Amino acid sequence: MSTNSTQHHKPMQRTAKRWMGAAFALCLGTSLMAQQDPQFTQYMFNMLALNPAYAGSSERVSLKGLSRHQWVGFEGAPTTQTLTIHSPLWHESLAVGGSLFRDSHGPITQYSFMADVAYRIFMGDAKLSFGLKGGLNLLQGNFQSLNPQQAGDQVFQQNVNSKLDPQFGFGVMYYSDRYYIGVSTPKMLRTQFFETDSLSFISEPGQRAHFFLSGGYVFDMGTYHKFKPTFLLKAVEGAPLSFDLSANFLFYEKFWLGAMYRYDDAVGVLAQYLITNDLSIGYAYDYPLSILNNYSGGSHEIMVGFEFGNKVKGVRSPRYF
Image 1 (cartoon, rainbow, N blue to C red):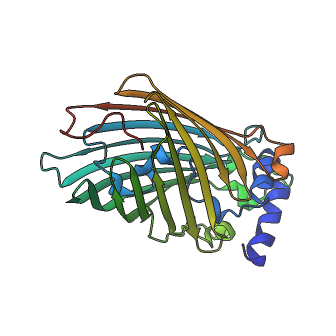
Image 2: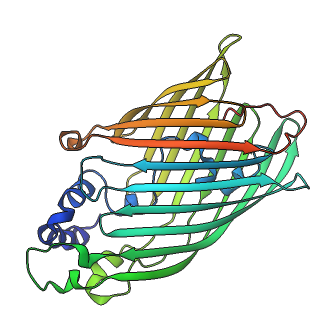
């Protein structure tokens, strides 16, 4: 974050008591720009949120819902809800999908409505998929709900009721039943957060493109156990590189248990239980490594997945990612 941006954020921290904790957290180790797009600990089971080329990979209709509550204990801390759906079409080379996002932190709430389409090239047991993502991003800022120390502060006398912007992204993924590797940018169009002159200190950075590189592999560890390491590398202009590493173990094709490490940010655990071949439920917990651990109870993430429709012949169930 630039010096000017940091100086602009100080008055906001001084004047907004009710958002003090969240602003303090954002200034510790993570810039506002680095938090533009929500992050997920269970990304390896929710890849459509990051890469449109993942559409159709389940070879039937796949529906997943996720709710993340970050930095529990801070008033105004980020919360994220997502709902994704995708499926191959009758022509198996084509797949479509869609996603709904709600991301809220402090007085700011963003909604995203995105559609996905993927074209897949069959290469033996693997597929090379090219995906496109497009839709709209709606931003709202409820600044009048804040309680400034200085009465009549013009910055906090205005709300941003609905700022609507188009968005576009793309991705490429090479995957089979046992491995995947992909690169994507789900939001590549740069837009301004606010158009109000008095909020230009927030608007100046704008929406920056986020680039993701992800991959994973499933190893056999005997008849009833499997090991799946995964990684996620994120790059965005104006912020340092971020990467996640995870190690997950599958027991009896029913229960996933794993651990994760997010560089210089958090460690955590995650678990997923396959109630049936069609229904699954997952949970993840992150514990911050920075000074935030003195103030926050960590982050919680719950995911529910449901798949239905006829399985394509030769495709295993349940999926490993």
